[in-house]
Amino acid sequence: MCMWIFFSIFVALKPYTMEENKDLNRIKVMLAEKKRTNKWLAEQLGVNAATVSKWCTNSSQPSLDMLSKIAAALKVDYTELVRIKRIHGEEE
Image (spheres, rainbow, N blue to C red):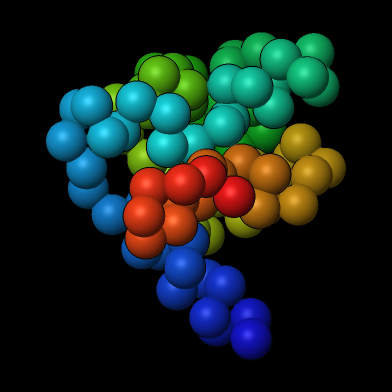
């Protein structure tokens, strides 16, 4: 079952057009809810702040491994960081 969940997230994170990519991840939302900044998250993960900024604007997406590290840093389940769409385009 765990492998199926990771596969589902991988499919959810596949490249999209700009319109489809608008709100693919919820990192920015979760940072706001946790009252944390991009800079804080970058320091926690050991990445450049510009990288976190790209994730927050959905101009690029983190790897599944990095998504797990982001979830750990924010103390949330990784499912709270992604927006998963059903086949017919409905959000879960």
